[in-house]
Length: 315
Image (cartoon, one colour):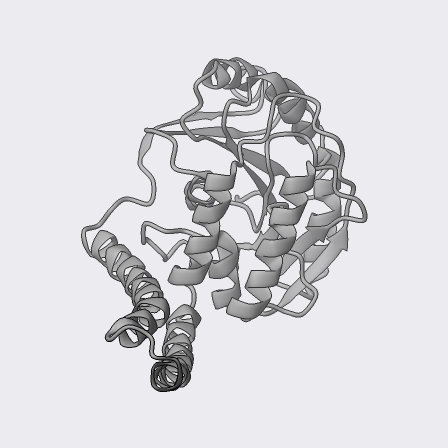
C-alpha cells in the first residue's frame, strides 16, 4: 500500500543538518503514513555515512538514492520523484530554513483537493540579500517567459500530486527545471504561507554561476521567447542602423569626415554586437539540442538503499 506522502530532499554536504532533519520529518503525524526519499547529489562530506546510520533507527521508511556525481538541485529532485511512491510528494531543501513541521501545511492544503500543486511563500525570507534578489529576479523572468499564475512565488518547498509527479518524470532531457515542468503539466496551483528561518549550519550551495545556469534553463528550455526577442532586436537595430547611416552620411557631406570612416563606424557600432548576440542565442539553442540528441543523462543513480521503520522486521 502506498503511503499518503513522500518527502523528497536533495542532499549536498548536508551532514551537519541531517540528524535533526530526518528526526523531525520522521516524527510528523501524517494520516496514511509517509516516507522519506533522500537524494545524495555528490556530497563531499560524510553525508552518506550519516544517512546510513540514521536509516538503521528510522521510524518511517527511508530510501537513500546515491547519484554518481553532483548533478544540481533540480536534477536531484527529479531523481527523487522517480522513486517516490506517495499520493502526494513534498520537495524541500536540506538546510532547515523551511521547518519540517511546515510540511503538514502544504500536505493538508493539497489533501483538500482544490489544487494539484501547492507552493510555499514567505512573509520574510532569511536568505542573504543577493539570494533574495536572485529569487526575485527569477520569478520576474518566469512571469515573462512561463505561463505562470500571476503573483505565484516559485519555491523549492512545494507539494504536488502523484499525477503531476508522474507527468513531469516523463521528461528525460538533460536540462531539468522542475517549476517549468510543473507549469507545463497544470495550472491548478495554490500557495500557502509558511515560516522561513535563519540558516543554522554551512553556506548555501547556490552560487551566482548556478543561478545563471538556472536562468538559462528557464530561458532556453521552456520558452522560444528569446528567439522572438532576437528577431525583434534584429529589426530594431537594423532600423537604428539605417538612421545612424543617414546621420553619418550627412556628417560626411557637411563636415568632411575622412573617406570610409562613416560607413565603417556605422557598420561596426550597430551591427557587430547585434550579430554576436543573436548568433550566441541561436548557438545556445543548437548546443542544447545537440546535448539532448546525444542523450546526455539527466542524472545517474549509482545505488539505492532502502530501510524499513525500526522494529517492523522483528518477529
